[in-house]
Image (tube, rainbow, N blue to C red; front, side, top):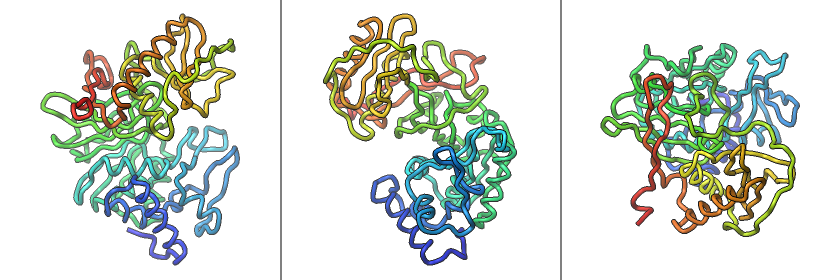
Length: 382
């Protein structure tokens, strides 16, 4: 599946785009690299994308800087909740390195049937179809987004993508069972309906709310148990309805800044952290306490990180990439955070992929299976 009329310059640009993701280690297999090199991303932008508050039109044959922007490792926002936008909500095509890492985590093979929760632009579904050569069912609650995804797949010549307007929580049993399910929106857990539609040896790759962001997990069955393995740091727009039901004891990400108050700073509480190492620490904090979340306050540079322990009636303490700790309110919260950072360092700074969780529902009334018990892999502990 390719755009058969692609110009030599576009073909070269797509080849370079795929090769750069492989050089970074995000792409590990030939099948995924081939999909990125042959599925034309520019055909999956419904007219254009938003950046810095303005809409950038994308013609049928983009060139120059626009082509470079589209085939860069950048997420592109395709819908915003404005009166002039028929979708009425945010939607995007994700950062290519995140898409690639999720496709690698799926361990796709020819002939596998896949269900995607969250149609987006249709780009992800078409990449999957290019790898498997089998039907990919992508569903979304927005008929506007579904129609765009279907048209984009058709423009790109992909005949194995079926886009449907369906509640993601319910899945789509009529086309199941599925070998793989991939979720492209942030959720708090696994819908029981997905499990009913998954083959016994199937996998679900899903961004699960954890500590104020949405790291990706790979969920499989182990007998009667449901096991989630950490895959990578990621963040997605949150789903709505029963897919975003919070457990007791978990602190949701705060959507408004905290009330202004003086910050106390303790320097060099932890190590300075580059790249994904900061998210490894953030993830670890989330496995240790439900007080972990994302928060912002005046005087704190959000670029340096917003991971914190937050107790509304006591105080808040942040650890940032610099290793500095900042806190307001009760110093005991900062002391707790200091101890958890020290514990992570003494363990050898385990990463997201070093963790597994058991997912359960406390009762049949809970809408999703959530991580309830986290463990470090034995090979890391040894």
